[in-house]
Length: 184
Image 1: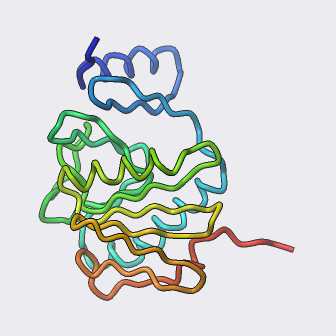
Image 2 (image 1 turned 135 degrees about the vertical axis):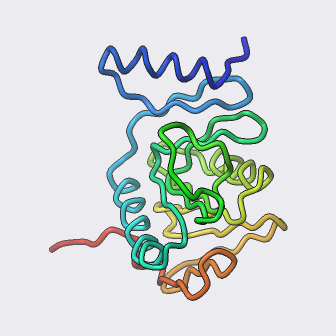
């Protein structure tokens, strides 16, 4: 049975009545149910949102979303990247609904139980549907891979700098900044 966005909305309403909170995505008519992430992946996502926000917000460049923000893709999938960004000209006002557009930037952060291949496929789908940049963060390997629509993949390690000149000219961070600190 192929499900629709409307089916997902009804399911979420019913779960909400039961005070259940699941992240649900729709891929090719099939439900994908996600549980909570490990806290390291969550901390990396929060830090990346902060680092992006410090650049984006003062310049009014667009909107940043966490993993709860769902987007309806042109192929009718409903997907939610771990971190995403939409340029201001494409979303002048936020909506109290799923975004009916493909984010310009999508970031997936490998959790303890994720498989890299599935995350790569998700990023490639976003790029095929119109995203400008996809980023895959792998805490296990301490790598950040940047995917572009032309198929180019750049893998960063150590103190390499992450830049996204296509969307955020002038913004850069050392990838070491996104890894959680160790307090001793």
